[in-house]
Amino acid sequence: MKSIHLNVSNETLAEKKLTVKWQVRNAKARILYSKEKEILVPPLSSVWLEKEELPDIHVFEEYVSYQAWEGETQISEGTVIFSYPKYFRYEDPKLSCTVEKNKITVKAETYAKSVEILNDQEDLVLSDNYFDLNGDTKTVEILRGRPEGIRLRSVWNIGEPLPVNGKNRL
Image: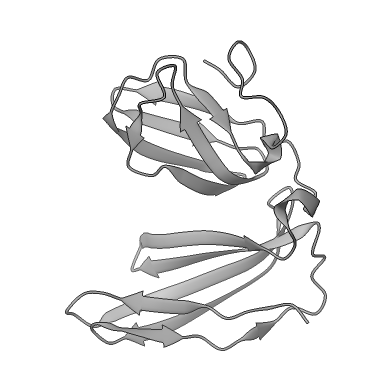
């Protein structure tokens, strides 16, 4: 039976009051089911949430997204699929981005696993190198390199040659 068992670590010297949220989503990133729980995490420790059984999840078409919130600030997030990535029925996320000064905002129309941002020189250093999108946007900061010839890809693009001209390139 498929399940999730989330763990929250607190690597600070202060107790943290957090809200953990998770959702079962389809490949279009639409939320099918969601749950949340408030927890207290002592300093320098971790807390396991209750194991959640997911007997009805469609392993090739649905996934779980999760987030940890401290007040109104999301401090952590991630996703998990229940099959090998090559068997999951990803939809084309139609990745796009905008660049404003030293920030790149990436948008996905559907679930995008392991989004990667490259430039012509392949020397970009970003505040987040690989991330998942749930049919939403994420903004990363450029720490080093120039945002020239930006290329975007995700697990959906596995098997395609790395785009050089045209597709997924600005």
